[in-house]
Length: 137
Ligand SMILES: [Zn+2]
Image (cartoon, rainbow, N blue to C red; front, side):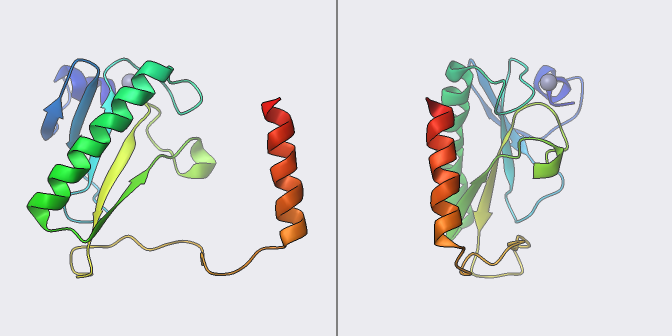
């Protein structure tokens, strides 16, 4: 689907593009001005995208985020990537969400699905951290 937006076969509201990336408006916006940035070359997800495309998409997302925040008077921005259906990925072409955030909740419908101020079990957290470190080799 996003390959079709990049090629122009599927309609989309293009905001910017460069050699490697394409930015367009999300048609299911979590806030006013919600954008998506994708690599032009197809990659399924975070695990598959080559480093050069990931770098290009991230830098493009930063540029678009600054422009969007400025023009919309946003009070903050979230960058979001979903990798896998259980992580809410619904289009399997890597994309970064650029979501302007507002104090004015009339423009901002994004709410956290978890309570970020609830402390976890520190021993369990340390154990999980050690497992990731070991997996990194
Ligand atoms: Zn694609």
